[in-house]
Length: 259
Ligand code: OOG
Ligand code: MG
Image 1 (cartoon, helix red, strand yellow):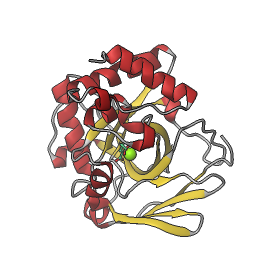
Image 2 (image 1 turned 120 degrees about the vertical axis):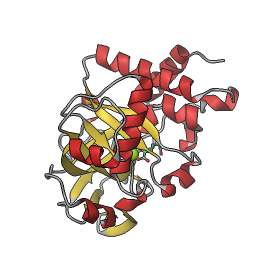
Image 3 (image 1 turned 90 degrees about the horizontal axis):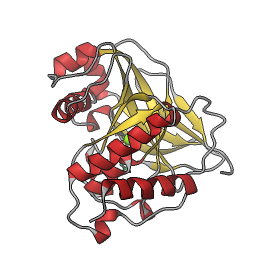
Image 4 (image 1 turned 60 degrees about the vertical axis):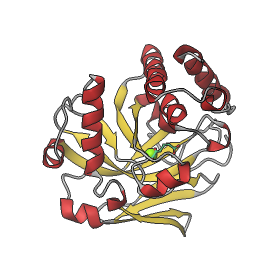
């Protein structure tokens, strides 16, 4: 069996060289979820050693659209670091393998997240909401993986563009909000915020259970991504990728012409 250390090395090499690798479950079908999170923990520790800081956490595969497309039928949790933050949406550099973008809801925590929360408790610890465009880039060939692989690969996390923070929107309105993703002026994906576990805030409930079971916490100020409301779309060089969600200002990401 491949050890978490060996897997973390292989993924780091794939990421820094921009070369995809076969999913580990192809040669080791018995790898577990626990193994996947152990690899992810090593990746986080290495990034911190290199000077990055943890920005928060991301949920993935929280909508049926994404679960069906990726063939993994349950939500996954990854981490976000300062190194993933896209500060200038018109001046991105890539070096990525086969990047895709997805529209998400972001939450900023007003209090620390350290225990399992109910839906209303989750609503109570969010001090601001935003639209986000997440850039994902699987380090696996063909963007193909099973649950242990995608956990090991930090749920394909690669980049994160955040829109303007707004104080708590109307929570009923949020569940009925429509989300549209455009590439230049063409509508390429449409979904509802409720596609995320019935209401995007359920992703925070799921995260609260996850982190309590793994024995860690997130401080106030952390950013949490809900998981994509639609299928992901390949980033098109030279094109503007714009996410629109009712109740928020649109958010746009220009992808570079070259790596
Ligand atoms: C896994 C990551 C999924 C989301 O928002 O659903 C994710 C993948 O599809 O590569 O970030
Ligand atoms: Mg995502």
